[in-house]
Length: 298
Length: 302
Image: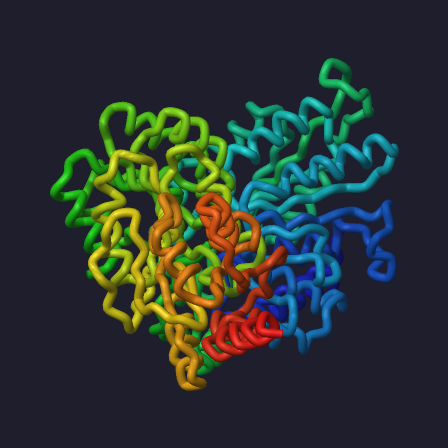
């Protein structure tokens, strides 16, 4: 059970991560909306699920978190700063060729398990890691954060079929279900619902929660973990566990009412004045009025 | 005229055209409301989009297909090669932010092998316009030809007014006896400025905007090789399979011997960052291009 103090600490960390994200949207810009939607997922997972010793980053017994929706770099690196993995000053090197902090993750940044940016890759990479952990009788937990738009890619579904064939119940997919992809609502482009049914039909254990509620995330990870039934049998034919899926319903742009759930606030490059306004807005003072246009890249 | 304006005009004139994208609408923002059902966004599904384009082309349509260049050319590669290539269907591929234009995205988004892999498909044409003006001059020919084609899109406005496009021909901007710069796409502008810098130092400098990389203008390459002491190929592409390779193939086939220097990304992904800084870091500003050219001329003279 999470204590009140633990909850307050997580909430305070999430707020700081949001500040980092907002600051990274200045100048060359970043994928601010999608980063803000996955803050609680990321903070919670690193704080309460992933067991890793930051002094032993290559320890084979560690848990893994793979960020498959790679454009959430500001949330990832913001979380790394709060975990003490990344020197805070380095965030100011965003988009400088002198550092390795750019729009997508790479392993030059300590804590990044694998590079991403091209969608639909890391479920498969994570399944490979999960398979090896099973072969070695490790109890490592492998978590992959995917986008919802990312579920368009067929490679995600191929991976789920194969991972279930191999009984990879040590693999958990967390879907940041913010219901937008680029400048469009997912349900207006390639509808995903009923999403729980889809994952269940593919053989997964599925839980759907409010992805901004730490207590709900705690319960989801607890419930889903207690359902681990897997005994490694090496083939699809024998008794096996299932891939876990947590669908985390979120709001794109969460924390900033002026950009929340807006199709045009995907990739944003804000001015210093706008960033200052957004920071005020984050702390509940004044609603920001933003003029900058969103750019379109993926 | 912009890429999108040309596309709208062409599609309104030709009912066969279907505009497709795999969720990247940067070049086609206004198309859905104008073309209605002839605009198809398949979501983030590059291979499905290309397979569907092949099916549409089988029924007589001309799909003009959009995605970021790396995902279009690589995620869907086998679908392009197998469904579009083997059947030789008129599917027109528009790759967005190729080469340095992916600036701060990182290696996952760097399309720097597209020329190499796309020209490796039998019958596939490969184009690399220098800028928006060049793009709108070339596209009517590209889209109306019966072959499958890949265009390395550079939609940025340049400061140069290009000559009308002749299918399969390069644009010879200038001939020079000391060195000829062979370039395509986004780096044209910087090569043009590098040419001026080198001329200020008394060199006679030729400049060729390649435009069509497949079919390639063999005569333009051979003329440059015989009329100039030195050739320099300039490209935001890996050294393997790009313009340097194309020039080498042409010279070998035509039994022409020449001094050729490659200014390319060699065998590396470039350091991501803001575009101006990327060009500086990777050595592709006009000043750095000029310096590299001079250095190589000197080293060959030794």
